[in-house]
Amino acid sequence: MPGEIIKEILKDIPDGKISEAVFEGANIVLYTKDKDFLLENDGLIK
Image (cartoon, rainbow, N blue to C red):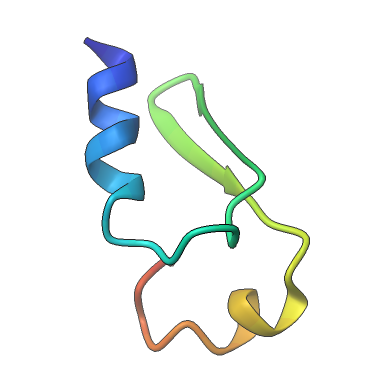
């Protein structure tokens, strides 16, 4: 079930932008190495 939730979230994010997606407690944390995507993602992630 948790893997399905992360897959659902990642389907709306362009390929190659997220290096890792994990649950940390009740939060879903997305890691990226793309500084521009982090800063200018047009509200796609918060």
